[in-house]
Length: 132
Image (tube, one colour):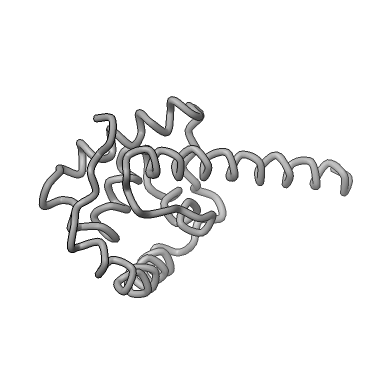
């Protein structure tokens, strides 16, 4: 492969990541959920098999207060339905180039710790799931 072919692959991959992020973040917004994913979050979750399981794992790790009112399964299904209405392609599970499991746990823990300040304001009121 020449350099331009690598650039094309990188550009296609970047476009796919952006499309996935846009679809997820729009779904969160449409449902009144006050969180957003970035490329790092999507990459960390890519080691989990299945989109519903990824969403549930994220909610359990970063927004557990929502589980007082809704089940992880319900939330992940509703989010995935909204995401798929906008962009039905699934981001494949990342096996190659996956960080060592300890690094995923550590990165997830660091992300969880940094989001605690953000979560404090969310615990006062559960967001309504608009349109559900």
